[in-house]
Amino acid sequence: MNDHDLITAVRDSFTDVHSDTPVEQIVRRSRAVRARRQVPALTAAVAVVAAAGLAVTWLLPGHSATVQPGIHLTAWTVVKHADGTVYVRINQLRDPGGLQRKLRADGVPASVVFGNPMNVQLKPCQWYHGNVSGLLPKVVPSIAPGQPAILAIRPSALPAGAGVQIITMTNLSRIGVRLVSASQGCTGS
Amino acid sequence: MGSQRLDFAEFYRGARDECLRTVLVSVGDSDAAQELVDEAFARACASWRKVSRHPAPAAWVVRTALNVNISRWRRRRREVAVPDLGTVADLSTAHEAADSPVDPRIMAALLRLPARQRQVVALRLFLDLDTGRTAEVLGVAPSTVKAHLARALTALRDDLVPTQEQERSS
Image (cartoon, rainbow over all chains, first blue to last red):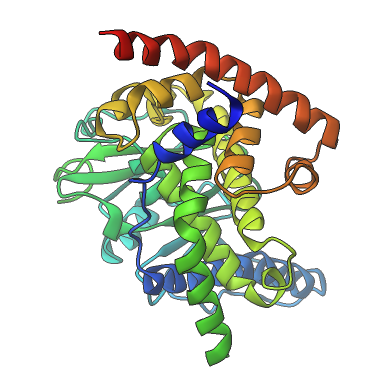
């Protein structure tokens, strides 16, 4: 078998591989890409304003704020985009219950754990045992650990009976996300 | 803006299968390849004004898909350090083989190649890139591309030819 025959054999074996994603879906997804790009820009803009000593509060839906002399800082921010993608920005490891409630209100069956999971009650949550191959990147297409940590969650990609658990330990440089079985005790439904 | 969208749609319909095949050979997992290619095309659409001027937009899409794959792998590697999250990384190739539309012997032979050789084969065979463009996409010298392709074809021949000859004689 010469090179040409070999190349033809390999090439021909892939003729049944087709992408069936409609272009409309790609265009919709590109809007989410643009929105993701805007999040760091927004972060930088807020940093500039805060450095100027102004009182800053996030004028975005769903945030947890603490009051310090002259400045409001948000522990986390949740923004739901028109395509259903939910963007979470975590600045500080505070108020996991509030974040959990906000995510559930925005349609994400979620459990949120801040702190060492060994010291936190994880028993109500069980691993999701359905077909998980390639599922996590579809449900959570973007995780960016750091200060702040930013996640994108696509609840429409979750199969029935599955939920998302966010676990962050002592700092935001490590953020874990896993798929769990949805239940009253774990994800609220 | 409308004509830009039409341009992108035309490019997408013409290039999506080749890009998917190229990324599938590189990552070995059809679900992951589809997800990576969709993400890369979405990024291309979001930056279409820039990408449309690229000398090989399909190569840009494949390079982006492979970069996204590397980023996700690195992210998962970080997640592994968190207790109880070790199985978050769920990309596996073994149980995908049964669902793949590709001849399993050829897919297995490709997956046995080192990653770089596989990428060279994918870019040369499915995107039809020449040596120079392949070298640019992978960030290596053209001579390295030639060497990888020669080794890959030798390995594939060793792997596949005995099987095919056996079939012919039986």
